[in-house]
Structure formats: C-alpha cells, structure tokens
Length: 180
Image 1 (cartoon, one colour):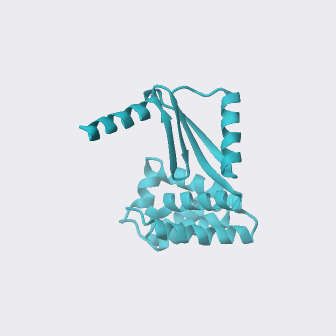
Image 2: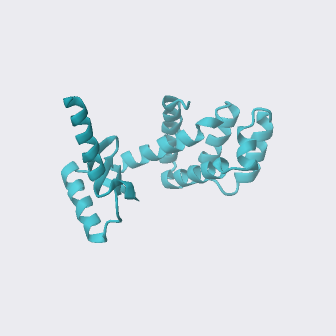
Image 3: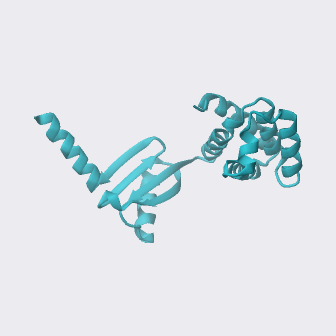
C-alpha cells in the first residue's frame, strides 16, 4: 500500500524546487518519463525495486543512465527515493506532482465516459458548459465504453455524474430491491 501522504510531501518539495528554477513542466515531464521507464516490465524495473541490490550501486547506475537526459531536480528526487528505500513511492509522487501542477494552473481532471465516441461539436459544447458551470478549466480524458449502452458518465476530480442507461438501470434495480 502506497502512503499517499508521504508521496504528497515529496511531490510538494519537488514542485517547490521546480518552481524556484522555473522548470515545472520539464521536471514533470522528466518524472513521468522516469516513472514509465522504471515501471516497464523488464530489467530496469526489477533492478530499481530489488531489495538485494545495495543503494549506492542503484544510485550510481541511475545517475549515469539519466544524468544527461533528466532535469537535475527529477534525477535527484529519484536518487533520494533510492537512498531512503522508498522506490515504491515514485508513481504516487508523479501523480501527486501532476495534480499539484494542474491545481496551480487552475485545471482539474475531467473524464468523459460514453458508449460511443462523442463528435467534436458535442464534446466542445459539453466541456464549455461544464467549465462555465464549475468556473474551472479541465484536462479532458475521453473513454469509450460500449457496456454503458448509452448516455454519459462524467468524473470531475472525485465527483461522479452518471447519466448512462446502465447507471439508470442499476439505480432502478436498487430501488426495486429496497421496495421489496
């Protein structure tokens, strides 16, 4: 189980350093890349998470491998995790860092899930209405899920709006079960 509070503390510290050096986007991109490379199945991920390999060896290998390509803040965050034996926090730190970056820009995540792909005009109108209603800008992810039968499910941060046919059928089934 990943300690989200601890991951957020690391992310806040990394974000503060990145802001000081005006490198917020670059550090975020590099953290994402490092996380993807290390999380990919194979030798790199096994090496990174292995408790058998000593910390100085891991630090040396990662410093040599990523020094020329990664921003120093991102690289030092990775090396600090190795030093403190907190490698498992990397993915959570990246997620928290990106959430902090979005919040600083006044952007929130929005997930649109529908039974079919929305056409461009529908999607644009819907996003504009939601931005006007909530007074926020959104980073939109669209997912097509044929199991929804029809309608739309919207996730805004931790809020969920379910206007799908399958959602309505589930609600009806719950109501009927409670009535008997």
